[in-house]
Image: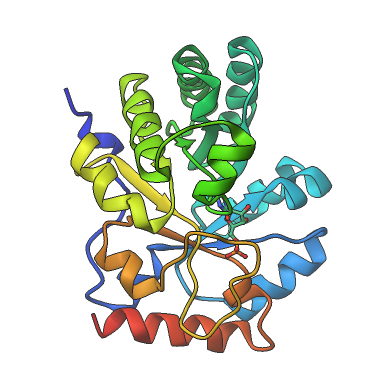
Length: 255
Ligand SMILES: O=c1ccn([C@@H]2O[C@H](COP(=O)(O)O)[C@@H](O)[C@H]2O)c(=O)[nH]1
């Protein structure tokens, strides 16, 4: 049975500027709290999700997540856990008690590992938090078909591999997946409308592709089934991050 309490929080469509902002997860890929603080000041008042990845978490630890929560942000702690089930369960528990709203694992770790992550995440309740959404990375958005087939050794199309992992994540009871925006609609088709789709690989027209391989513009992604768009450098590496965010919101509000 679908657990409707785990559907994306605050997803009301992109009718207002705040609705659109709530669909954006800003990737705080910085090496120190002070650099991240500068970005937070620039984006002050915009109700987006904040994403803390390996670089910032390894440098600053749980205290930066707690600091974001104190300011009222929803926080995705993107550590992409991939280990034996018992270790992932412990990792998920540690992130859940800090108050993360979303955490993730690699689907390649298998069903038992994903189930263990969910068990660990349930510890949030003992610390007075809601259980974080637990989602699985399918195929990294930096991976193209050649890399997947020839280096990683997975045959077939990237889309098929993503859908196979999405189905496995759903079977394990997870709340959704990370994929590129190209696969988001197919994930919804395969796993249901309430299965959360989080899509990095977002590039506004004319911005640098960097190391991403499977990209779409914010408007294409939102129109194509993405619940949440992860955006880093197209905002954080710009000379005026607030102006870059405003331009993205303007584009989304014309959908
Ligand atoms: O498949 C994935 C999974 C995670 N990411 C993360 O998203 C951001 C993207 O940053 P950009 O600067 O917009 O490229 C980054 O934190 C990645 O670790 C991803 O890109 N792809």
